[in-house]
Length: 240
Ligand SMILES: Nc1ncnc2c1ncn2[C@@H]1O[C@H](COP(=O)(O)OP(=O)(O)O)[C@@H](O)[C@H]1O
Ligand SMILES: [Mg+2]
Image: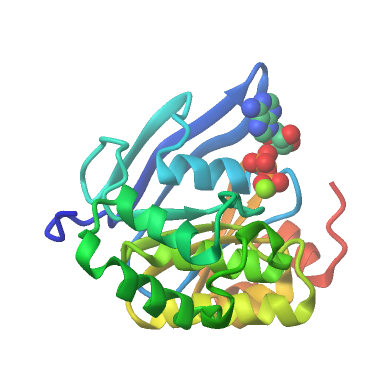
């Protein structure tokens, strides 16, 4: 990892993603810099996952340009991705993290200590030896977070990581995300849960049908939405 290279700002310049005649993303331009978490908000099907996948460099857009810290190569330098459903290897919790570290070229010597530190950070130290796939949904998502944080990413992209979790497990994941944000990792996270957006967001990107229709601080988004769609979404009665 070359710490001198930054993945920020993340810049979209008229980015579109098309599937046949449909625009999944429609000419999105924006810049995301360091700071408090950015929440990508919108109803199901609005393009949040597609936006995050392109932000990570996992999907190439059909039009427009994406750059990371001024570079257009898609190879992630300092960004990590957390999927909606964690994908775990058929190994222990600890081994799942160790594997990630090995893949990232982390020196073998410090690996065990680093695994322990990461497990501790997400409250899984006592379950280190448990097969990862036997952990509960919330525990698996915390393990996935530990794995994503293992390389100290500058940017962490999360795709509705609590969508299938109960409220307690959701809060636990949110705490870890906030802790990462406080220690300097830029969080870009999709959510359609307004309570969660209020708890986490520094600023909001509001998407409807592939269009970015509002970009504002969280306070402005909730107190002074500038579009009828955002106002309706906040009231809970956006009908598409
Ligand atoms: N590869 C694809 N081909 C065709 N349609 C797609 C593809 N990927 C996503 N879509 C459609 O694009 C829309 C936005 O998808 P998505 O980015 O998953 O939105 P969200 O995450 O906000 O629910 C959805 O209607 C989805 O069905
Ligand atoms: Mg999605």
